[in-house]
Image (spheres, rainbow, N blue to C red):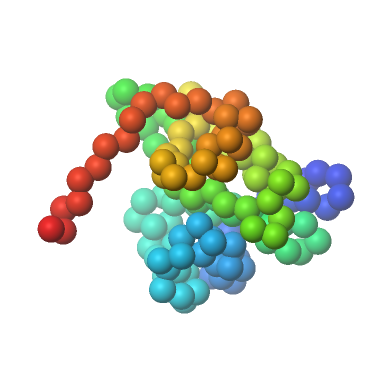
Length: 150
C-alpha cells in the first residue's frame, strides 16, 4: 500500500468486496460490462487463470481510480507490467488520482523486476493519450487485431 499526504492510498483488491468497490469506476471505462456480480466473477477468473490484479486509489475511503494489470514476459520485451485497464472516476479527473495510481504501477513494476510498463489505448481516447504523454509514456508500436468470431 502506498500512502500520500491527505490520505490517498493504493490498495490491491484481495477479495470480492474489494473488487465490487471498483466496479462503479471500472464501468466508466468498460461500459459493456453486464453488471457488478458478473464483473467480480470475471475479475476473479482472470486473477486465478491469468495473474490479473486490480489496484485502486482511494481517498477518504472512496475509490477514485482503478487499474487492472498483470506481470508478463516475452522474448521481445523481457519482463514487463501490462496495464489492461486504467481509469479515474469522471467526477475526479484532473485531480491527480490517475497519475498517483500510474506512479504506483511503475513502482510495482520496478519492484518486480520489470524492464518496462506497457498499455494499449483506443485510438479515439484523445484525453487519455494526452495524459499518457504528460506522464512520460510514448507510442512504441502499433497493435493489430482481427475478430475471430465472424
